[in-house]
Image (tube, rainbow, N blue to C red; front, top):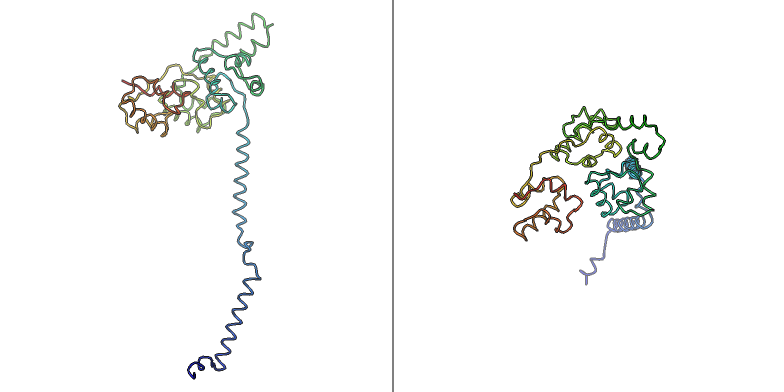
Length: 292
């Protein structure tokens, strides 16, 4: 009993320590429950927030600029441009097929007749159509004198375009809107393609605005098609096909999966049977492939 009782006896110094410890615990609990330690006011990175907001505003401004439509010649609408304008794949293909015959559309009505777009879409995009000057003169002024008509015809015929595949950086820089960097980018893309086969490929150059590209095509065109080094589709490696223009990793994999099923491809047209094959790019892709 004495031993049990001795555990509850403390001297004055020990009792004071217990009281102090109890008081300290109560103070800590009071501070924890009644004071707000969750405020982050002191830690807000004001300068960093301002920078982030500035970047967001600049991105919004860029996004708004992308919605701007510049005047363009509808004869040179690319797949991507047609998609931006709201045209369907079928309508774009009709225009491309028409252009392959060597013909041009010379009015909004003729454009609708070829592509079969509806009236509402025509009303939206036709104000941005920009045809060559001689087409506009032909439609606007039927009272042109015979002498003026001859001048127009002579000036049109006398325009001799340079070969876009042999043009130098300085040649491209003679066009208003083409600087040193853009000229180098055009030649770099031309080298990637092993030369332009179609005038329309110029519109694929990164960051080349359509109105500037049209100015270039007014002075340059494909006068002599390039000799392209083709890859044998049945013998080429995965890496060799992947490095070809217009073919990404996903398409390369689907091509090789198809090859695994048929063992040997007999005709390049078979590629169109591949799931999700970009039919609008078939003619461009076929430029780089052979079965021999």
